[in-house]
Structures are given as structure tokens and as C-alpha cells.
Amino acid sequence: MIKLFGLLAPVALLLPQPADDAAHTAPAGLSVPEGEIEDVASENWLEALGFERIDPAPISRQVRIEGRVVIRIVPRGRQVRRDLMTSFNDTDSATSIEERKIGKCIPMRSIAGVQAEEGNRLLFFMRDQRLVSARLEKACRSEAFYSGFYIEPSADGQLCVDRDVLRSRSGVNCEVDRLRQLVRVRN
Image (cartoon, rainbow, N blue to C red; front, top):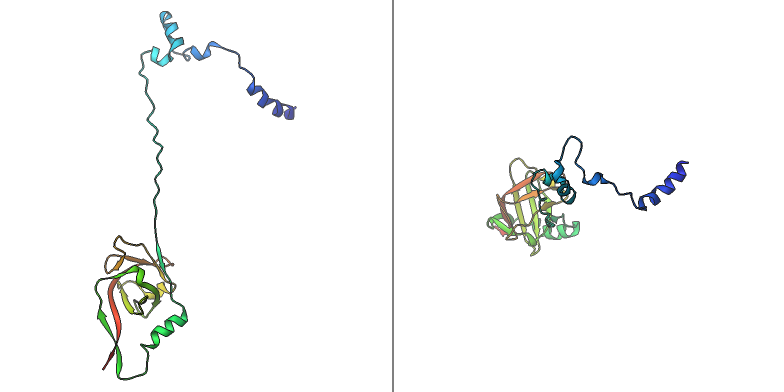
């Protein structure tokens, strides 16, 4: 019997419904004066009782698309790091490595790779074959950035000291405290 009802229920919904006057009558407990019966039938019964019609709020069909770009800097391959570091690690005693000021910002696009150094220092491998040392704020350890870092690009496209935040994959967020270029100097 239940199967038969399940099959016939959709068909019953398609059949015309008998007309009744329930749609034009006021709900129980509300009485309408006799002279206003035609008004109730022709208009909404709430308006006939003196209530104001409230129009629904306009529906705004807007779509807001927000884009977010995050740059990921990964460690360079071992061979590339080895080639760049060999020029700095020569056993020649007449040369030494010196840190020089390069300003407060470097272009984000010029960073080709990163390597975590001891303490709170990162070593950036630049696309123009330069090496830049970045000191992180005191509370940050460079070991958290062993697999690189993420950074949101700024409007000027620069990575700046005390402004931009480096995010590691492990969730550590650190600001760069100082930038220095590593230069090989003859004594």
C-alpha cells in the first residue's frame, strides 16, 4: 500500500485543487467588519485591517571576488648553492667575506632561493648571482625556514626591513630585521 501511495503522490500534486474561501478569510481570532468583506477579498487582509504594507528589502545580487597572491621562495638546488658558495669558501687566506649595507629593501622578484643559516639569519640567493644575508627579529629562529618561506607581495614589489612578514610552512611569522650583501674582499 505504501508503494502505491509513493507512486500516486506526485500525480495528486499535479491535479487541480478545489477552490475554497480560506485564502480570503482572516485568521482565527481576528474579525473583519461586514462592510469590508469585499475589501478583504480583493486586497491583502492585513492591509484591510489598517496595517501598512512592508516591502521586502531589495535584493542586491553582487559578487565580490577577492584575490590573494602569495609568493613562495624555496631553497635552491644543492648544485646551485654549491656553485654560488664556492666563490665565498675558497681557502685563499688573502680574501674574507664582508657584509655591506644594501638598503632597507630588495626586489622580491630577484630572490631566487633561500638557505637557513645559524641563529636567526637567512641567506638569499639572488638572480643576479649576489648573496644577501637577512637577519630575522630576535625571537625567530632560522631553522623554521628550512623549506623556504611565503610572502605576500607588497604594492611596490619590495621585501623591506621592519615591514614585510616572512611565513614559514610550519606557521612561524617573522619580520626581517636587517639586510646585508655578502661580498668577497681581498685583504
